[in-house]
Image 1 (cartoon, rainbow, N blue to C red):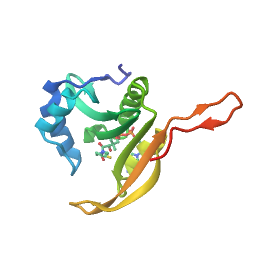
Image 2: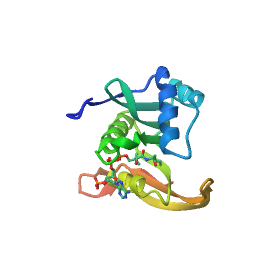
Image 3: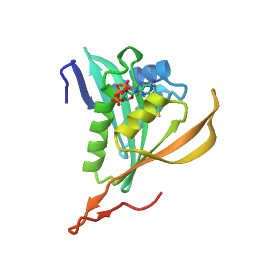
Length: 165
Ligand SMILES: CC(C)(COP(=O)(O)OP(=O)(O)OC[C@H]1O[C@@H](n2cnc3c(N)ncnc32)[C@H](O)[C@@H]1OP(=O)(O)O)[C@@H](O)C(=O)NCCC(=O)NCCS
């Protein structure tokens, strides 16, 4: 998977754990450790994607699958590359992999005060369905709980959803 800007999307490997932890720490107050990333990449219930440019890791995101639901997490793009559509393409590719693995409903938590991330997820089909007050510390913030549910059209054109939260 690669684009015209030299960004390539690929599955993350255990060797990427240090770079992913450093990238996330540079842009997010909720950064995971190198060990947490290594364990995640090696977990059979998780799918992690990396965005790579000139051999360096410039983006990451992960999906934790449980039956037909999945949690999206660790979405981060190198600050100098924000606003170029990298997260849209990277997370879009990850959601497609999740759907191929049988996921019918995706969920995530996001800081209410993070307009770029909220916009990204809305663009990808997520909608806010709930709020967890003061969920985040440092700085304190509410979490929006967002869901993206796969709907299948029935023969008579009605939509059938994938169940509730
Ligand atoms: C959130 C993040 C991953 C977005 O990465 P990105 O590659 O810049 O995203 P994209 O370029 O694909 O842009 C996604 C959308 O957000 C919009 N956007 C970007 N900055 C914005 C801002 N400050 N306010 C509102 N919308 C914004 C973009 O315009 C785009 O929408 P559009 O196509 O309708 O214009 C990146 O900002 C980041 O790494 N932030 C820090 C980590 C983080 O917050 N992760 C999410 C945790 S839940």
